[in-house]
Structures are given as C-alpha cells and as structure tokens.
Length: 317
Picture 1 (cartoon, rainbow, N blue to C red):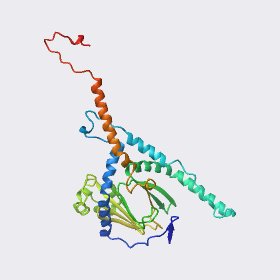
Picture 2 (cartoon, one colour; picture 1 turned 120 degrees about the vertical axis):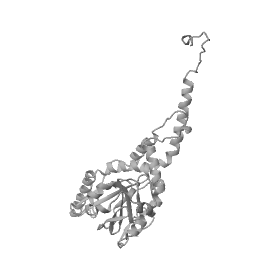
Picture 3 (cartoon, rainbow, N blue to C red; picture 1 turned 60 degrees about the vertical axis):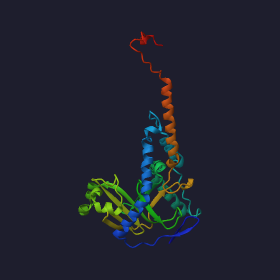
Picture 4 (spheres, rainbow, N blue to C red; picture 1 turned 30 degrees about the vertical axis):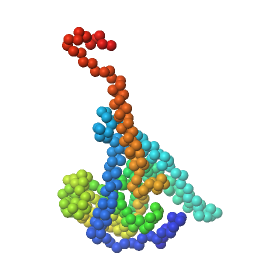
C-alpha cells in the first residue's frame, strides 16, 4: 500500500513490533536533547508576545518604554495566513451517473457540516496565532468508532517530535511523540489501577537522571511528565519512565498533522517572531532613549536658592 503526494509515491511504513520501555525512553531522551533549544525559544517568544520584552536597564536609559508590536504582528500575520471557511466541493467521479452525483452531494454536505460542527476555522486561527510565535502547530484527528465520530483536536506543541518515511513534507509518520506536564492526582484518578505507579516528576530521581533534564517545569511536586508515543500500530502511554498503557490503535495511518511555515522557506521550529525579535528590542531601546531625552528637555533646570540670596521662588520666571 502506498500514498501519492502528486510528485512522489511513498510506501507506508509496515506495522512495527511492540516497543520496549527502553526503546520508548531512548526516543524520548533523544527527542528531548534535540528539542531543548527550541523549547527555550518558545518561552522567550511567548514572553515577547504576551508581556512585551523586558530589557535590562542599561539598554534603554532611565525609563521603560515597550511596544506591543510583536502581538499586533502575530495577530495580523495569522489573519493573512488563515482566511475564513473554505468552499468544500466534492466533484463526482462520473457526473453522468445519478448515483455518483448523489454520493458526491451527500459527502460534500457531510464535510461542510463536520467543518462547522468542529469549529475548524476557529481552532485553526488560534493555532496559527500560536504558530506565529512558537513556529509550529499540531492537530490530531481522533476517530471514535463507537460513536462514529471524527474529532478535530488542536494540540499545543510545547514538546512534539516525530520521524517520517522521507523528507517530503507530506510523507507519513513513522512515529509521533508528545510529552506534557499533567496533574499527578488527575492521572491517578484516570488510571486507578496504576495509581501507585504514577509519581510527580520532581520526586522521581531515576527519571530525572535518566533523561538528563531537570528544569523548573519538570521539577514539580504536583505534576507528572506524561509521554505518549504513537507508531504505525500502537499507542504507548507513560508516566515518567513507567509504562501505564499500551493499546493497538487500528488507524490505517498516524493521524497527526503538523502546520509549518514551509511556504516562506523557514526551517523546522522557526516562526515569524524569530524574524522580528531583534528589531522589536532595538525599537524599544530607541523609544526609551527618546523618551528619556524628551523628559530632560521638557523639564525646567534645577535651581538652588541660597538662604542669603534675597530671592523668593515666586519671583523666578
């Protein structure tokens, strides 16, 4: 079985054997090492986007003057990239046959209805705003076979890593790994039979030493590092380095979709915020100096009147 992107034919990966705990943790540790610099960039860009960049005092003079240009830039950029709802059309394979025309109209109506019910446009717009300062955005198509539903679930890409069959942007995934800090008590309530295995990451010295990653977000006494790995056959769920659940997902492919800015030639993990970060800092610095100098010019000079000067302050013009 294979898929085509219009230019190349890519073979789908063969369903893999079940991975061991050591293999899952090795992928996590390798991904963590590779992505740590990008995660630090996320934090800096988010601070610039949400709060305005805080400069050191020697960088701008006596007064803090900060522009919210980064926020306006990202919001404007997101509206340019993502327009309103697309016009979904499904042409029939054979327009001359009534049956094909009827099937196409039903599929078209179903897709339009699903698009509205799942609020895809609103979710994508929020995702594009996030991608403007984080560099990428991920969503997941979750198929519920019992309820016969397909849900569109946007995901925050604070930690998201993957491997693909080839370098083609449309190439299928070999595996996808996500990690996030989750409340330990909530995880224990969700997995009551494994509650004794779920511990806060800040208390799990073995996990912190093994991953060689100790930071303020992981070193928390109330949160657990929740790791989910999905390959062509299984979904692995880990609390720190403890296997909690492994299930067969029965998807024909890995239904993750990754929004990146390939259209503007940016490398993986890069975002428009990376391009304007330094100019915004310099602009804040210039405005701070201008504000400082304007106050010095506008204020009258300081005059000290001695006790024997025989001059009153009221006579000074």
